[in-house]
Amino acid sequence: MTEQVLKILVIEDDFLVAQKLANEIRARGDEVVGPFADVSDAIERLDSVQAAILDVRVQDGTTFPVADSLINSGIPFVFLTAYDRRHIPDRFHGHGIYSKPSNAMPLLDSLHRAHDLSQRHREDDMEAVVMQVLDRARVIMRDSDAADRMVEAVLLTAIAEAEQGGRPEDLRRWLMSLLEKEYKDRGKLHMH
Image (cartoon, rainbow, N blue to C red; front, top):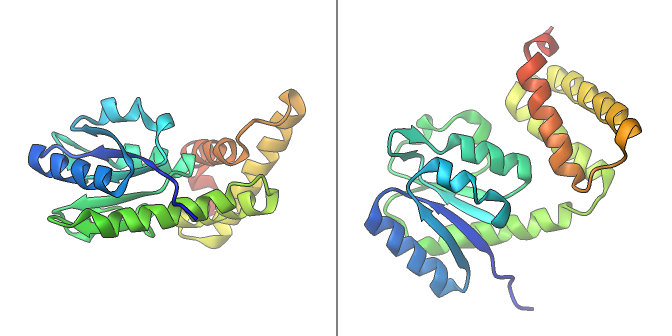
């Protein structure tokens, strides 16, 4: 069985590191989207990628907003950084963190495995999608009871919205966006 070619987003502001990484990705047979040194340029291309390699700090900011969007879209990513793990928020626990300099092959192997796994879970199996939403809620809330309450609120919102306008095309993405909104709007309320 041939491995699927992935379109891999690269965010890296060091020109030499970015070029080396891009060359190694192409040598593996995957496509490079970028490399980008600017987060806003990269964000515009998120719907065209299947995986990503992110430097933690680029120019004057971080790639954390990109990582959050990738999580919500179910797109696997890894960090390639010179920073220590403690500089990466806990919400990204479970995503690979590789130290610079690094050979791209372990990163690419990890991304391919994660992509294959996400493809299997991407089937519109309602239970699997709800479990993914619950897993994400437990990462961002850290209290499983609060996470359960938040997911319950998300599902009630989803049911109400579905009754108004039908089922969305991408169930997982839709529920993850509802979770993000619920967390921002009422996350603290679920802690009590």
